[in-house]
Length: 298
Image (cartoon, rainbow, N blue to C red; front, side, top):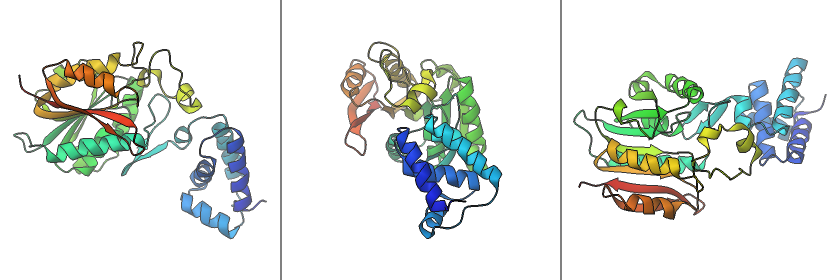
C-alpha cells in the first residue's frame, strides 16, 4: 500500500494532467474529505510519509472522487462544501459556486452597512439580489449583529441550497435572515420597507461568450451566468433600476460585474436621477470588480 505522500503526489499529477487549475490543493482536499481529515492533516502525514489508512472502501471512494475531478467536476460539488469568508456553504448541482473575488464585494457591502443609519426598528436592512447559495447575504448576517438580510433568488434549485445554508446558521443569526423566491428584476412587492444596502452578484456574461473554465461552462447553472443581451448587462441594468425602488434615500447599491463592464454600468446608473456618488471599485488584483452607487432624493 503506497504511503500518504506517494498517493498525494500521484493524485496531484493526475489532476494536473487533466488541466485542473489547483491540483495540489484539490488532491489534498479530496483525500481529507474522504478520510474525514483536515487538509493540514493530509499534508502533515505526507511530509512524515505515514502509512495509508487500511480500509479498501475508502480507497475506492477516493478513486471515484479523483476521477470526477479529473473530468473537471467542481471540487465543491464533490465535497458538497464551499468555504466563503467565515461560512462553509452547502453547494451542488443547480447553484452557482461562490468565488473568492465575491468576498471583496461582500466586504464593501458590510462596510457600507456598518456605516448606515439603522431603520426605526434598530436594524440595518440589507437585500441580497440573485442570492444563489446565500454567500453574500448570509455572511453579512453572520458578521453584523444588527443586520436584517433578505435574500432574493429566482431559481428553485438554488433556493434549496439557500434555505439549507440559512438553516445551518445559529438561531440568533437565522432569525435575522429571510430567503425569498423571486425575480430580482421585479421584487418590490415582497417588501414593506426600504433597505439601507442592496448587494448583488447578478449574471453578467454576454450571451455569445463561452466561459473559459470547464467547471463554469459545464456545471454552473446558465441562469446564474448569462446576463442577457449582447453585452451581458440586460439583467444588471434591470437590477440597478429595481434597486432604486428598494433602497431608502441615502442607501447604497453594490453590484459585482466583469472587469470590462464598469463604464457601461456607471453610464446606465448616471442616466437615472435616482443615483449619485457612482463609482467603480477594484478587487485585490486591481481589476474593476463592482459598481457602487448611492440612492439620492429627487
